[in-house]
Image 1 (cartoon, one colour):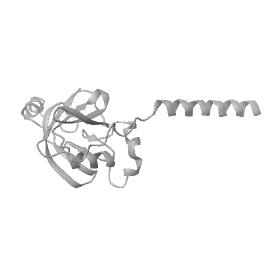
Image 2: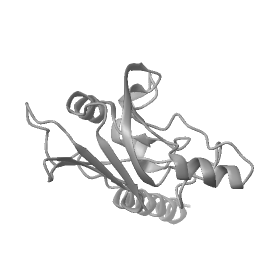
Image 3: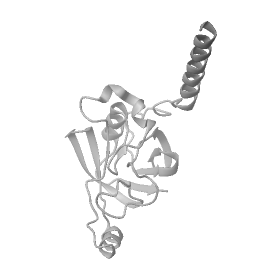
Image 4: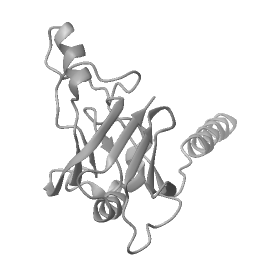
Length: 177
């Protein structure tokens, strides 16, 4: 009985250690955006789950992100749970979002509309860079354990606060595979 209990306890401990090693989290971001810096380009690397913010051609900071629930491949139509791929602009800022704050992305572009039309479906829209759902911000970077959005790009609330402050409407955003 005691041997069996010790065996079970050892197995549980090993599983917990493996889980902790598997879900190690990187820091929220590499560097704070310095005062006075304006972000003029954002590149999202979907396969790396990473957003890099640039100013005057220089990478200023990088954030780990969560994407749409079905992240592989470009968004094709409304409801496919994919994050778009392509070149867009930041086209809005909402300080009162249901997801803390958000930066709007100008999806769909002309090519996106044509692609969805060929499939006989609407392209969708309302793609954002946003924080965590209001009331749940305390989960912080744990939100990155899985891709959970409907196609948006999610940061922690602290990260979207920082990016929001330094990113004007019109900023270029490129979303890559």
